Image 1: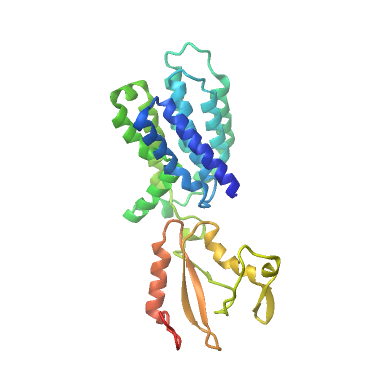
Image 2: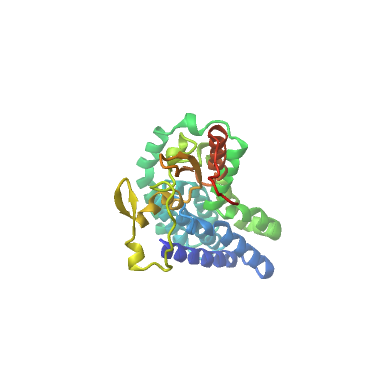
Length: 324
């Protein structure tokens, strides 16, 4: 997965440069625009964000790049169509890119003397037809009461983070319009970027950033480790075959020590925040720890939960001889 993330990050960097060239930016403006596009979405390549978010990030930049080139008559609609078809087949949220693709098709065909690009237009249409059953299933089974309620400031911040992760162009569009002014707007480039960025806005009231168990629960409780407090041991780095085969006692059985990473991985692998906190002592006086796992990007939620638990149960109690 790390290798794939590195490859995708490299592709995003290449697309950022291609995007700047498509807009014909030069000098400091080119460096600024390429940097904003790349650093606006590259974190999705490495943080384990669920579903194909990193690929959709690439699709967003690619659609903007090839769309601008098609509008300026510097390329056909085929690259733009391939990106749109791929986004639709990749994930249902690819539907949000359709307005920008259709806008690019209209502007590219207006006044063009080229023959109609059958593949550039037909492939996304075929992919859209394939997606119809999935879209209908989502629309008919949508949890309107849960997702379409009033938007709080906190949820708006979460949604802003989601949009910026999936569409780094959302923050560059106003800047480029200011820098390039009326010329880029009249040429169609600016209007395409606005459509691409604003396509996500109508869906904001219907998108809940908390998915899975976090749609209905604030935190997920799990053990912090599979034993109470244990005697720490020296372990070599990098690990050796002997250290990897070392065991620890769990309920009277010897279990591989490395399996203790299972519970921390519940939070770290999907990129969720987690806070460990004490909940009591064993019969032998050893502290027992749990962890509160919160929704993606909501670091304060498990921290606040742990603070409330400490307020009600007394929190950490220093053992005899404890020093800070």
